[in-house]
Amino acid sequence: MTAPSFEIEIPRGRVIEVQRDDTRVRRGSGLLRGMAVIWKHWKESFRLNRSYRQIHGTFTIEYPEERPRIPEAYRNMPILLYDDETGHELCTSCFQCERICPPQVIHMTQAKDPATGKPVPAVAEFIIEYDACMSCGFCAEVCPFDAIKMDHEFELSTDDHSGLTVHKAQLNRPISYYEKIAPTMWAEVRESALKKLQGNIRRRPDVIGIAPHLTERIAARRVELAAQAPASPPEAATPAAPAEARKLSPEEKAAKLAAIRAAKAAQTGDGTSPAEGVSPTAPAPADDKAAKLAAIRAANAAKKAAEGAAPAPTGDAPAAPATPADDKAAKLAAIRAANAAKKAAEGAAPAPTGDAPAAPATPADDKAAKLAAIRAANAAKKAAEGAAPAPTGDAPTAPATPADDKAARLAAIRAANAAKRKQAEEQARDGSAEKA
Image 1 (tube, rainbow, N blue to C red):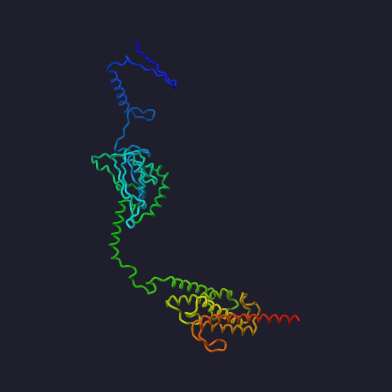
Image 2 (image 1 turned 180 degrees about the vertical axis):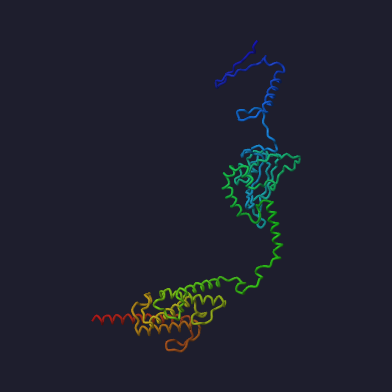
């Protein structure tokens, strides 16, 4: 007698045959069949399998000597990461993981600046209840700074229930640790995570945001350095020159720099001084003129920086009533007059500039140039001494004032221009006479 069978037609068109009251299965035969399967697997587990096609039986490893190969995406319990080089934690206490956690086992507090009391992008305390964590990995997925990751450590069994409440010091792991267990997953986010970390470090004062065990080392090192500081003599106490012991002011630095530049400029001019004549083989008159002017300015600046007050009354520097613009104009007029006198004495043509013509010098020009040089020198002396000039026919006897100084320089310029015009007129007359 066969058992009745039923055919059930489902919408997809498949037919499933259901059998009931199978008479072939007798009482106790199921147990024997199960034991037969176990015996077969146990017997074949002793056979050496040379390929995957020959695999039979149950396989185990010699744990804990042998460890199973865990995939990178394996999730066990969350951990926090910190940078190996700086020690700063990647967590900024954004509270995203705390909000998304289904069993609500994550608790954190944000760090604050002790000086201002304002929040800092760093976490002060981070607690996870491992005993209630469901290892869902939502916290690692939602973290925008890649600061929280899922660990591969699974040997967490303990009889101490309170030990399963883990604090930040126990959660911290270096980046190198996670890179070792999940190299591919970390390589995908490494660049963005470290870039965000550098931006957060700039907003963290002192040691806030550094891993707790590194913070203690830094504090101990500071105490050690503070204890060693009085033992070593300070460098400032060693005997040194008075000029080197004090810090140079910006004015003194500028004066030294100007003196160095003037020395170099003088060397390029074959060492000629302002009082000497310029030979025909010397450098260009414009270069020599610039070198002399730089030397005079450097000397005056050095004197002012050394004395810390107004410079002494000399023929090259004006006194207190004169302004920097007047001082510069007087020196420039004196140098121009001296150059004109030298060129006239040597009988050579002056350099082709906007202030001197290119025609040969004549006795009248020589006289006019000398007169202009004397007037310019007198004007410079009056501006420097700030007193009445010597009684001469060409200079007034009243005390020198800024207006008088300006008038003297103006007279010198006018005299030089008159000499130039006179020289041009004489040359024009000589040219016309020769043509006639």
